View 1 (tube, helix red, strand yellow):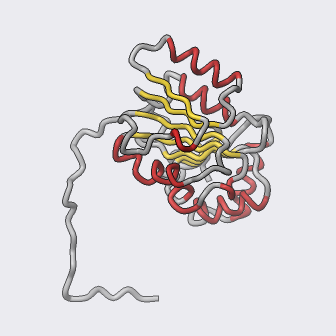
View 2: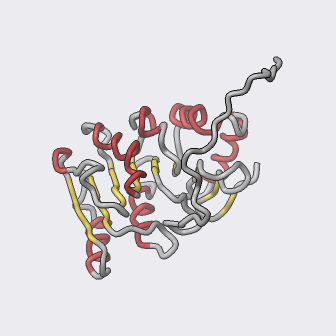
Length: 227
């Protein structure tokens, strides 16, 4: 293979230069904008992890929290609602019907929206959030048991923070092909996952806004994996 530079060039400059000072919206272990997929089998700790993240001092920062779930009756969500009631300046909204969800254009900026166990529902609005939410500083978390049941276009393809509890072969292979393949071999990835998942409730974090060996792959959020 050869790369032949031509005499005539076609060079493009950045139209909108990056600001000199980058404002950090969230804790230092998180991307500046979050489009997250959280996957794992039933009772592995997915919802518990996301709710704990919302309440952690080093977690994401937000003014509004929208939750769309078919299981809002879970004690975890009742606990979250009670915890946020005492926080000044934070608004909390709950939805259990697809038709009730605001579009990204209607939602308030500096918000987080959680989609929990809604893979069987209409996905159009969810796709819109993963595609357009960042333009209004709206972060997304999609919680589901099965990775391959999550829409690939606009959701899986746009995700930049992938949190994985133990996966079966088929789902893990899809994750590797879509997010990991250029960084390591399939066998290396499987070995990494097996090592992390050898302890109960452990999870892999893939932060696609970080470089390999600089926080892209992690055991939980705060242990970087060097491959």
